[in-house]
Length: 634
Image (cartoon, rainbow, N blue to C red; front, top):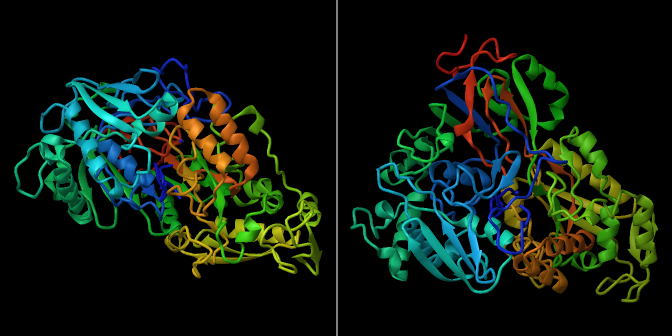
């Protein structure tokens, strides 16, 4: 479930800083190259201006939303990534000198300034940036966004009760290029910058602030009724996917790219924005970039082999054949994501809920997840262990040193002992409760005598890697007498069926759910868990609820140091709100050697303005495809 701030998400999602000082942050920096992996893009060669590059998108990544206020279910990373190329984000996860930060040349906002005991944040905007129609980008454009989300927060996919915009008591326009947010309390500047300020957008108020098509442009957003009417109009246009390319609304942009085409099937063509006025370093070298979705991984693989895409991917199962692509002038590079991968436990399941409630049962099952074997065999080494709610890679100060070791390493003996010590007998291959009750050596609340430890798992179909992982898990669980029934469904069906429910609901019959073939949750820069693990959270599909976890999650939002996020990570690592699974690379990328400047941001965003072709690339394809840049050697 890939997402920016929701999943599909995250989105989802969207597939990803450390507090610098308790005094108020001038920058937010977190995932570093030291000991982790943030790729510096291959550069060099003789650049060739112009050309078109085609990037393949996986089957589940069909772009379907252009409006930078994502509706529920439309907040996935690929939508956000394309939007950010058209509309400069105020803050975002950007790479600077091998580190992930929240502001840089590609962002409209400069480093925020904190004051009043971290109750007020001032946001200076980059000056000299204009919309493509020549109008300047000002603080009014951010105010416009704020009014729209405040009046329509229930229809905004990134909204969670108590967070943006609820936590802003007053929005102040200081001057044309400065806004100030007066907050409802003191916040952790690191968390607020990474997870709240990164939601801000500048939208062209002078072009979009009309209540109906053909209506007068005004300050309609400054009333609730007006903001609702304006939002409804923009949302209606955003639902007309096939009209994006000719809709005048989407022609007013301030990013380095402009929209050249968007088909009903989700193929997006961007052209260089000749009227871009941002930093020179963000001006595109290419003429165009095409994001091409594929209906199946096999179809993409065949097109890639024939040279039909410049930037594609291969399934991990064919990693052993990577030399075939290298010989044809490609480089193979796993794209690691700032993500966690897990199986959801449904604590309210009418059947398995009482089992899920028992920490010792979750511990036993975690001991039966052979992450190393899955990584080596299923993922061909292109995955890393997930051992808690904070990603292990890239290296980050958010990861407590105490979390470095997996507290539940693979051990069938440890799993069986946990069950037998708590009143289970494993006989004829099945674990059954023989000592019901709530004592320390009994099965636990609501677990009945002779209950077999049988569980049902909803799992994504269509992925060889997922199918193999689930079969490996089923086999491992059986070694401790746990019977797992796997029900494979298309991804959208798994997501649709894995909804929060109550034990009184007869449809609450799923025990576990897996939808994370490419990562279950892609974090914003601060890997806090308010959307995943707090009671009643929007992406807490399994109804996990723990008072201490709630307190620790709130502390991450409020405490301006690393101790809070470390305490959160250490506690949830051992409490197992979900079953941690290997975290695969977002994709195993295959990129033409003569296409340079490609950075694979762990938060899964794109920066094709940095891409360029070279005509003297060693190992470049001897038979370039249709997208050979102007002036390149044939």
